[in-house]
Length: 321
Image 1 (cartoon, rainbow, N blue to C red):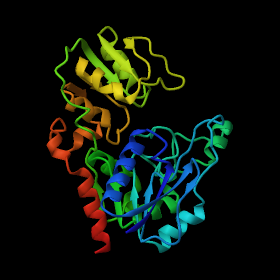
Image 2 (cartoon, rainbow, N blue to C red):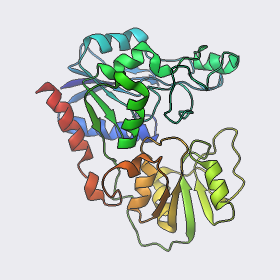
Image 3 (cartoon, one colour):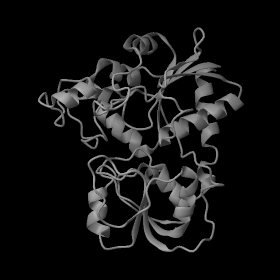
Image 4 (spheres, helix red, strand yellow):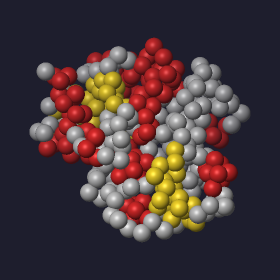
């Protein structure tokens, strides 16, 4: 098939969890013989050349929260997305919640109302960065609802992720869906038999949505180690901070930890670090808000998601059969 993949952030340039997943799926699709042309906003890329057989939308919205955010006013042309929603065969993949919420880290935790309690017309600077001066839930936007309700397939990254987004959308959730299993290199993330000299470890963005206050309360006096960026405005005043390290070093940290801690406030879409830690042999300390643990199988056994990419593409190829 000739496929146009539209992703706000280029999965070939950015290294976030969602971009890593999309990049792996693009590579798998090309190995299967599909022609996949990338279209992105950051950086601006357009490899399209005439109509495609299928349009693959991936996190097509993004809303920086400050005026200093580079590219805060960049976006896909609404007319392009509207044409795809109205006239083209397309699938819609979500790696997080950017396509149903234009605020940071889903402040309502999925308990959305038509009038968002977390928006205010008085927050002028914030609203300017957001390009939104109203109080309506972003999921009420007709384009947003059409992108989900008219998609040939809505793709989510965990059962919890699916339940949360479909709960926000209500009747606009669409009829066909697919839950993508974790896509992780288990040759890098595995138990290497190292000495586990850390009691507790957290990896990821260190901030409110990821459960910083809960970790402070529970592990303030414990041997807990942190790896990752500290969110703007947050203060890490306990534990041992190792900074943000290259991704290739994460398996070593996970192999040194007895327990991996992940206690998010929001419904974490998947939380690939949780699966990575499980593969490395860590005991997990989590809560009900972790998408990775909502799968009905042992995420510490790589055999349970060894064919994730094949299963994804098999579902896509059936759309053209």
